Structure formats: structure tokens, C-alpha cells
Image 1 (cartoon, rainbow, N blue to C red):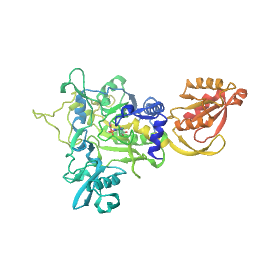
Image 2: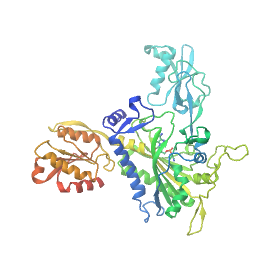
Image 3: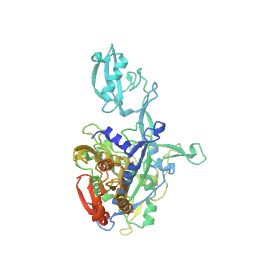
Image 4: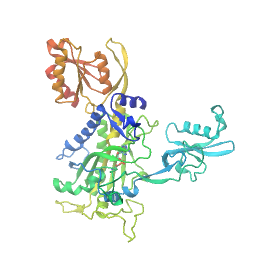
Length: 535
Ligand code: GAP
């Protein structure tokens, strides 16, 4: 599977388009086309059904320490600015970037690599964007700088392997990825990833607000509202699906790192003594969900973070990672993080200060010597009415990206195999082997030919199925070609009305993956498809 083929199929078949394409596109923003919007909606619906709506709150599920409640929520994208002070995003949610004074390009400090090169009596550090092509890019840059032709490229002596720019102290001898002269990169500067906007008519800092960089905070600040309105006892999870925004310095790898994306997050509130057990439960449950949705084998892994990798709030995190085709051999990209956040969020929304244990960064003090930001002052702790114990709940957070999951399902589904054409000759075909729950179109209905009453029967079947599933009707071109188009769309079943259908009231049902064709009675088609989709 190669990424270029997947990207080209996504555009050709209407899964994904570059945002604002006719104006040259906007980097880090993507639009979902007719097939893509169905696929992504199915991903979100499957998650919501499995985690929230279909949740069994009266039994103890396998692996769970006890039964628990699950509720849903849909919060605003713009929230009170104090939310981001207390969450730590205002002060801590940044990347370091370097600017090139010559080309005006901006790079993430930790995403520039370089090598020391020497020629014509000069030693320089040649940089390139980190990635598969970096060594070739460095060689090209060095040849340009030293004015050495390709046939004499061995005149450049390379010293050591590729090193991250973060290891280099002075940039005087550094050649930027696209610059012609040395020392054009600025020292690294902090860059907050939140998009800023202004609320109402106030244009100054009084009206400043931010687009949320995660959906999680809406859940934390509504914890008491949900608890009181549902009269649930803990443990309880609150789930939300929604857009988040991050002004990523270097968005890349298709939708993998976008500036506008959707998250599917659960904040699970529990007793501190049971939080490690719940952490393990959610880690395993979420990994299993991806397996159940069709990602199998060694392309999916779970990786526990080392201590140094943990976010400021986290006392344990495991990432669920997928071997995306754009990653180097043996490397994986994060699909979802399952974090043990302790009581960090509820406490900081109550008290408004970051504690040194969970946040080893200096708490900023105002002129009065008090922390610069205030909490809500509201009591967000929980009293157990059975034991009368009062405590601040601990939180386990399975936080998934809807776009990354959709991208992983696209990559996993992409298959090239061979199938017989209408003359029985084997031909290569591209087929998207989506899990039936995720497939954008569940079934396509074809009349074999556009005459002899076949279209009428096919249309009747189509209209009947449309009440239950997303189905597609096609009568254009050779039937073999129509099958191929549905294979590329990932449609699990094709129903063909032929001459026999008119006499014995049966149709052909073709299976996308096995290519098996069986005859089914017209009045049983809906039932047979439903059974297969749920299998
Ligand atoms: N509330 C915790 C949180 O937001 P995160 O690891 O920053 O944690 C969670 O984000 C998930 O959101 C990631 O695992 C990823 O799937 C998705 N995500 C984060 N940044 C993204 C981006 N720039 N583009 C697409 N998806 C992103």
C-alpha cells in the first residue's frame, strides 16, 4: 500500500479534497467529499453507539472493575478564556519554531534535521525537514551552497549522521532548508497553538477568546451539571464528539496533522483508588475497538509513554498507534491517547492553580504574589451518598481523533487484488475493504441491462432499501465496470437484477471481498443485507 495511490483514490472517488482548492488550497485544512462524509460519519456513529448510546450501564462489562454510567455532551467551540488558563493551554500549549529571515518560511524547531558538511575549506550544518527524503534534500542544499555539480558531489565531506536542530547551540553556521546564505534561522521561539479570535464588538484583549484545542475541557467544566441532571453515581464517563483547532506549525501527512480536526473524547470520572484499574480497562477496550472495526494484525500497537514523554497533567498514558504508509518502516503514528489525568483538571478548575507535582513548570504569579489565574471557585468534588465519602474524582481520558481514525480505516481498507472481468479474464482491481459498519455505501443496485423491465424492478428494490441503508443505484455502462466502481467505493454488496429476476423474483447478491455471488429472493434482500452488515 503506498500513500500516493490512497491520496489519489481519495480525490478521484470523492473521499477527501484540499480545502479551498480552487484558490490554491489552505494548508492543514481538508474537506470530506460525498463518500468521505459518509465514511467519517459512520466512524463517529460507530464510536458513539459502542461507547455511549449502546453502553450497558447495569452489568459489569468484561475487564471492567464495576458497572458504570455513560453520558453524552455537546459543548461550544469558544469558551470562557479562563478555561484555557486553568487547563494550562494558555501557558503551556506551544511548540518551538524557528523562522527563516531569508525565505520567510517557518519550521518546527524539533522537525528540522541536519548534518555537518565540509567543502572548499568551509564547514556548515545543512538542514532539511525531517522525513524520508531528508538526506537527499541536505545533499541538494549543500551542492547548491558550495556550487558543486552533481558529478563532483563527493567533494563534499559529511561528518556524522542526521541530527536534530535542537542539538545545535549557535545557528551562525546553519544553512536553512531553502536558504542560500548561512545564519538566516532565528533562535527558537514559543508559538501558542491556539487560534485566537474576538468575541462581540470588543476588538481589544478584553474580547479575546480562543477556538478550543480539545473537546475535553467542555466536559470538565460541565462535570457537575451532568452529574446533577442525570443523578448518576460515579464511576461515570462523559463523551463528546466535536471540532478542535490547533494552529500546527507544520501540518502534514494528509489529514494526519491538520489545523481543524474532530475529536472523539471520553472523560471517565472515578474513585482515585480504582483509577489504575479503570486506566487498564479503557486502554484495552479502546484497542479492541479498532480491532473490531477492521484494523488487525501488526499495523496496530499500544505503546505506554515513558515518564519524560508524559503531558504536564498526566500520570500515565498509552497511545494506540497505527503504521500509516507515510511513516518510515517500523514507525507508527498516534490514533488515540488513553491518559490517566489524575484530578488535575477538576482541581485546577476549582482552585485555579497548577500544582507542582502534576505540573513541574513554574506557576506564574501576578504582582500581588498570587497565581495569575483564578479557578471557578466552584466545588467540583463528589460526595458518595452511600459511603458519605467526599473526594475529587480521578479521570481516565480515552481521546481519539475522528480524522486520524478515518485515515487509518482508509489506509487499512486500500487493497489491490485481482478479479475476473465480464469475460472471465483476471484483471487487477482496487478495492476498499471497509468494515461493513463503516462502508459509506452499504449496497448498490443494478439492472443488468437498461431494458426488458429490469430498471423498474431494480428501482423498486433500491427505493425499498433506501429506507434502511445508504444505497446506490447505477444503470450506466457494463455491469463489470459498475462492480469496479463500487469496489473502489468500498460497497460491501451489489445486487443485480437480471432476466431470471423477472420470472423467479430473485436477484444476484455479490460479495465485495469474496466475489461470491448468490441468488436471493427479492423480498428477503433487506433481511439478508441487514444480517450480513451486522455479522
Ligand atoms: N484531550 C487530550 C488531547 O487532546 P491529544 O493527544 O493532543 O490529546 C488527542 O489529541 C487525539 O486528537 C490524537 O490522538 C489525534 O488522534 C487527534 N489529534 C490531535 N492533534 C491533531 C491534529 N493536528 N490533526 C488531526 N488529529 C489530531
